[in-house]
Length: 163
Image (cartoon, rainbow, N blue to C red; front, side, top):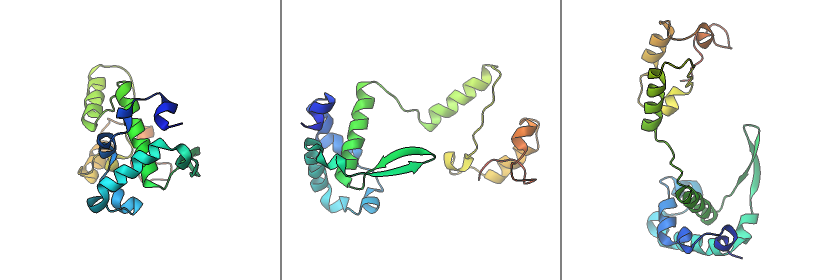
């Protein structure tokens, strides 16, 4: 039984276009493939993998943040799973919010005057180009944050925002 029949999806879920959309910039180094030279061959391998489910049995169980996860090391299987996820998002009209959408939502929530607390502790990974020292100094030096937000669980090192 093919993955298409198993999931009740049309052939459009796994075509050259859907696999080309599943390619990512760091895949060549991560999976040891040369997408500049072998792009079409890798897409063809992914199409074959989608027709045969036996490759999905070769996985590694890993635990991430206390949760059991499955990891695949074969590139065609990764492309199949990415394409499948994209198809499910498309068919169910799921829209993943961008950073701009998230920021707009936070600003709107602050304007709504609803009592709440918003914590974004990993500022550096969310905003790559933000000057962290200036932001930390401004946040610690104002009454914007509650006293518990400026206390670090590791002693007197100040606010527990990661940098």
